[in-house]
Image (cartoon, rainbow, N blue to C red; front, top):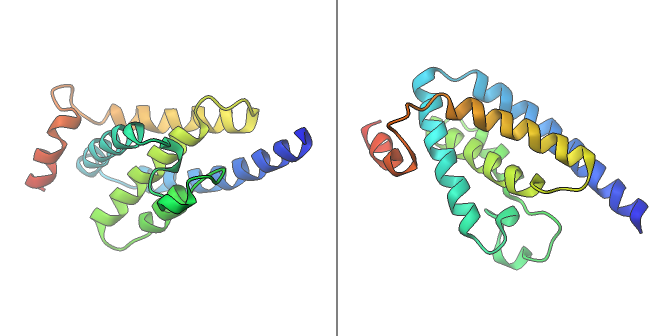
Length: 145
């Protein structure tokens, strides 16, 4: 059974790793102002996911509650490829929030490494936001856009 668990974790890590590279490319292509908006959206998504009963299943339909992982990363990546900037930013924020919670505290080395990479992207986004702004100012910044 342990071997099956390791194979499942490895295949999930490969899929998330591929998606992470796409998300990273999208983030690196953003200008500073858009990166700030993304950072605020991501902080909000992380907080909302953290308040849900199953944070790693955030963005997934309730009937899929008992799956190993949800559809949040796939939905986020699909939205991240949208032509609409707002949808794209929300997709990236969703992907980051779900991937963060899905890989957090993982005992599998591949998923733990992926979590460190997600943390690096979150740190990069956090540095784009001025200290006087935080998640509570996200609505104001979004309304101004």
